[in-house]
Picture 1 (cartoon, rainbow, N blue to C red):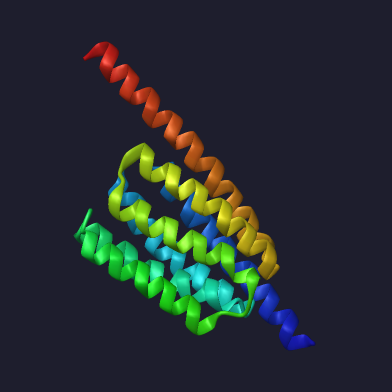
Picture 2: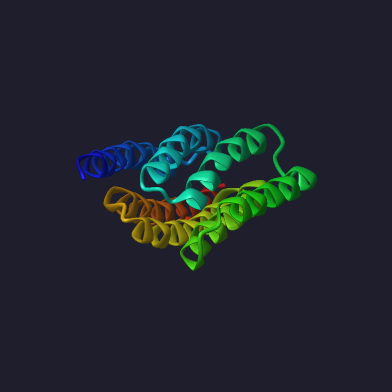
Length: 175
């Protein structure tokens, strides 16, 4: 019982680190900074899900680290996107435990498509929907910190989309 309690506490602590990284990332209006911070946050999320023994979510979160590195170097690369989508499906198939893994799989697939194919507001909209899927995945894993993190990521994403829209509108008016 003591080991389970320690693992649970460690999972919650790691999820709070991920929370801090994600909030700073999604508050940024610069896509490059968003990607770098998300890379580190997903290392923390993968560790958190492993501590909660939610293996599909852990595997997909770890794969997201690679996805972010690839999309920064090769944006809009359809072949790499398809390879990452396939890798996400393979990770899910190898670690599948049941219907509780569906939200993590949906988040991984949607996030991959959004990061490779979209930019700016559209990308953040896709990532906001993926965040809602991650909220469900965190709830199912029992992660309090992860649930709060992804809920705040969703909210921060929406606010940043509004800021980007306002900035574009102001440039149009003054430009």
